[in-house]
Image 1 (cartoon, rainbow, N blue to C red):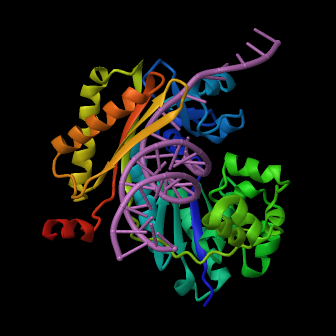
Image 2 (cartoon, chains in turn brown, blue, purple; image 1 turned 30 degrees about the vertical axis):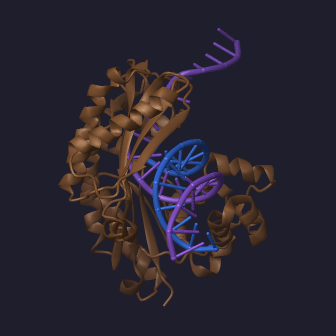
Image 3 (cartoon, rainbow, N blue to C red; image 1 turned 45 degrees about the horizontal axis):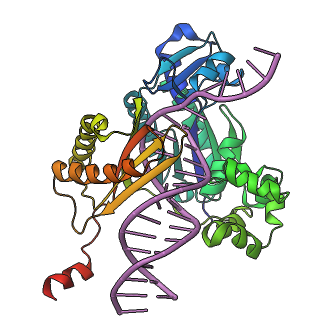
Length: 361
DNA sequence: CATCAGTAGATCG
DNA sequence: CTTAACTGATCTACTGATGG
């Protein structure tokens, strides 16, 4: 049976939660911010309410710019813990509506409705409209819903109409739905890729579909080229990832003061390394890959990384590896650093035969 | 030639 | 009046080395 997949996208999620926490701000612009702590207003916008968006405020925008657009807005710091709790409550409700649920991010989830609806789109619509209303009533939060034959199309559909949108794309209308959309509607096409496509005079998905597979592979490499080829035709067989596990954990932060001196970083890096160790160890995750990253005052990024033969055994070992990596990075950095970060990955990778041979060879 | 390690780059919110 | 401002987390592609 052809699949029916729904995608739920919470509307201005963080800002909407803050609006509920401050009912007196009804119909006023709310801007949820990541304050870096460097200066009073340094940082970026994480989420903007629709009243703020009307004035041009967007996620990723520097806070100072948002304040110029929206001087009377309410600028509040992000509270990820709260948003995570509400996200869990909302998407737990979704399990009752589908055969499987993938929580794709803090404010997005997919539900596979194939079995439950027996392939009936009218049934799928009834279910998801009920879910949408339930979330509105229970949490006073709006969401947009897309229903389509696969994840790719469901996600585009949920984005088609916002806020509180509801868009159904049936198999027979896939092509006509996609054709006029800008290429940026596709997951994975951001500003850089869009620019590359514009240079080839490709603006819409219809134009993207007119490209040969060979041309796309030549331009973007095998993986992305084939993805674009299929995506432009609405083809996506990828299943819901119901047990998704992160491949890496990282932490990056902005320094109060630019520096290129390890002694100035040491204490803070140590603290962050211990935190990262505690978080991963608490989840029973053990890693072999350790990286450090620096962003200099020109916003140029540099990294150093190492791979251990056996999983890291202690926070002290982690810090010791991190220290060596930073010393290498710092001594080669052309400019003082503005931001630094840590990353661990390679979780629970199986022992390597090569290394076992070394013991016996 | 397939795989792996190290690195830069891109996306998203 | 014009310009610049600029977080944090994650995934993925590219490149060069290495072993089968």
